[in-house]
Length: 476
Image 1 (tube, rainbow, N blue to C red):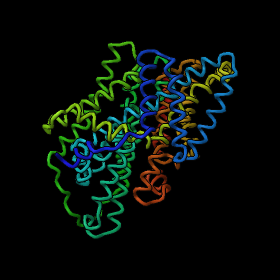
Image 2: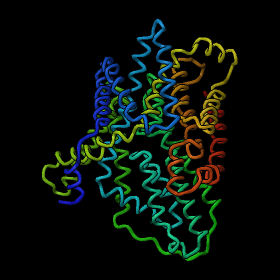
Image 3: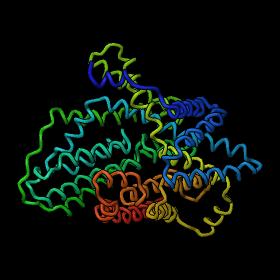
Image 4: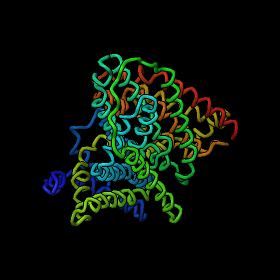
């Protein structure tokens, strides 16, 4: 038996925080898949206990959001329709923690696979002419499967591969290669918000728009994501100059290309399964993911055990998901605090806002759909640059525009505008978790990794986004 397998079987007890989040997840499944709205009200207090137990490790921003939610919950409860508002808010409150937990199981299965490491080494080892494109796609698909963990994995591989010796002993070549590889990964990662059904961004936006399906948004999102990646490639072409320094040839990774294809295959396969299930049932894509993701993770982990010819593959797979997934639920506290409060605020603030007055103002202002879309994207970017997470901004704006009718403006257009703004700011906003994590790994200031390395690209992408939204508005 391998050391890895022994580690799984010799695991300790499951922490209480993990049991709490697991119960919240079951309540979310009962609510979203079976329509048992009472389950949301049952699960919400357990989520509160989970957050209270992990309060000491929460960031200040997360604590502020939680306090704001508590105050608004009291205000909403005093309204005549307070019970209905809080019930809907509780449903949104527990959905995103459950979604994060299910993605944790997917990461657990992926971490058991040798394909992940092989694909990462293959991407980092690409020759300079192909490295930027390879790492952009790597940052994108690794980010879809592993969220911010995929970003961390690739950046760690970059640090290990980009030695002074591999750069021919020239320090500035080493630094240039580091910058080029890191920005490629970050730009690919940022495009997840535009289309990925496994990304928090698209899930949050679509969940805030009743009646809107992922299939309605995906074709536009994929097209815009390709455009963003192409822009990044153009920047790399113009900003990178041949160094002339002798560098060591990259180490070959046997079957690395097949490993990358498998990673992409998992993303595409799970997305297609979800799409087919949505077409065959009356359930939303977001609700179906709560069941499909853990089932897919279990099947993936079991297949690995079968290929390695281990006895009891299902039992071994469950052990892997428990040890590497469920028992780590307590470490998701900051993500869960931000995601759950954003979902809650997206319901409560919309209920408290004077919708009729806002709609009347928009109509009186005679704003065209293009101007409204550009304004939404600009607001996400502006607030992101002063530290307001796009999760909060987009949740509130999406929920608001779900209940406000703007002549000529579709829900799909609102979602794409918000997602584009999210993509523009994620690699430069000072409080973005991906930027903070990347900077810490590299040992560099976040301002350098963000504004200095990505600033011109982000600004250009933002200007082109505004221009595109204004032009699209004229066609509506």
